[in-house]
Image (cartoon, rainbow, N blue to C red; front, side):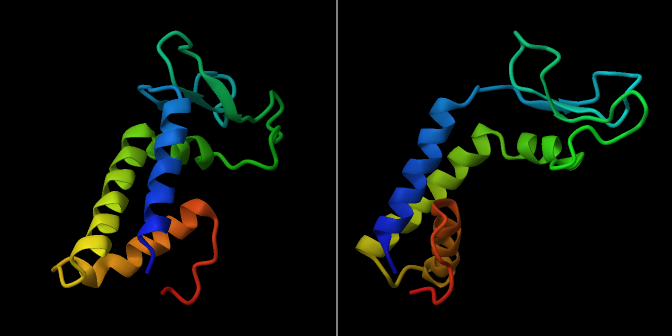
Length: 127
């Protein structure tokens, strides 16, 4: 198992958090006439947010590549979630480099699966 993989994934999360709007994030319907429009609001300076999924005025799906739940999912994975994941990955990286007999070691392979998913690396054959 690779502490380096965990550290790289944690660094990637932190890099993306630093580049993101800190929030608070919200997903909301801002157009009462278009109840299927979900907007992602990331900043108090932009209260109406950016449209993530839209239903046009005649009820047609105006964004067929996105689903109405996309905005809600994005909001769920706001910067504090990424920072918590980065902390968790770094803790396992330290475990692998210092004490592989730790009580946490049994869960360590799952941390590597998460790290590889973040890095978009193959997750089969966890080592």
